[in-house]
Image (cartoon, rainbow, N blue to C red; front, side, top):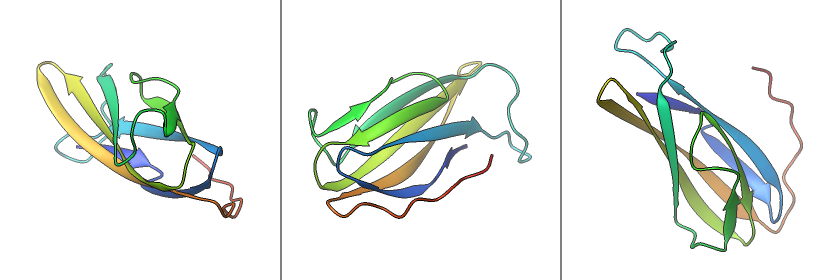
Length: 102
């Protein structure tokens, strides 16, 4: 499986946030080998959001209009693919600022 942090996030329009994917092995440990990560967005159309990249374990999402999106990621290692996702809500109201420690 893949965990995405944060798993849910509310952003204001034009606000950006970094999402981090971590591949988890069958006993719950972080996969330390280099997995290939691939990101997709559903729920918002192209042009309604910006994504810093579609590859890599960290991406930055920017919502350009109000709406809700699912930010999905697949991790592939040694011909095995696992997935995870996060939910992003984009609102005209600015979100409360928080500090996340990793």
